[in-house]
Length: 141
Image 1 (tube, rainbow, N blue to C red):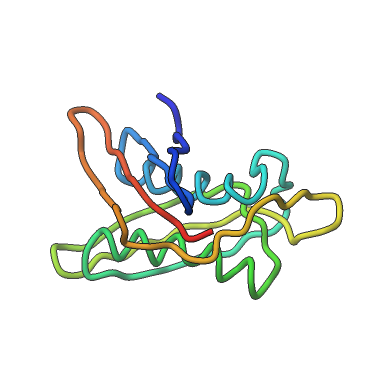
Image 2 (image 1 turned 30 degrees about the vertical axis):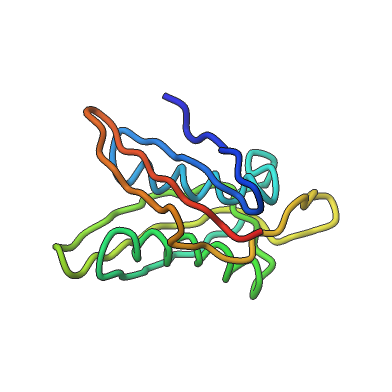
């Protein structure tokens, strides 16, 4: 199964991310987000950040999760390379996500080719389709 697919969008970035589980789809959504800015597969995994976010529903949880990537980029110059140990818990009105981000701080030898400014609710979809999950996200570029 492919991890994600970048979709055409007139002004912003849009993608579909896939996973056998909801957690795997969220991991692939994180990789799709950063793929709009840098090649995550070329970033060294030498620094980690444990993250924890909460949301009243899965859409808010996904938005806050992806915003953590942008927050760490803006505040720590952190470039995400991988997401590990992602766990989603909770019930209908309160969800929690915990994960570990691996990557490196921006240095001149990494190429940055895009700028995601914000994650949006516009066209956001989280769906379980037969044997897998799909996540659609539009980001402001």
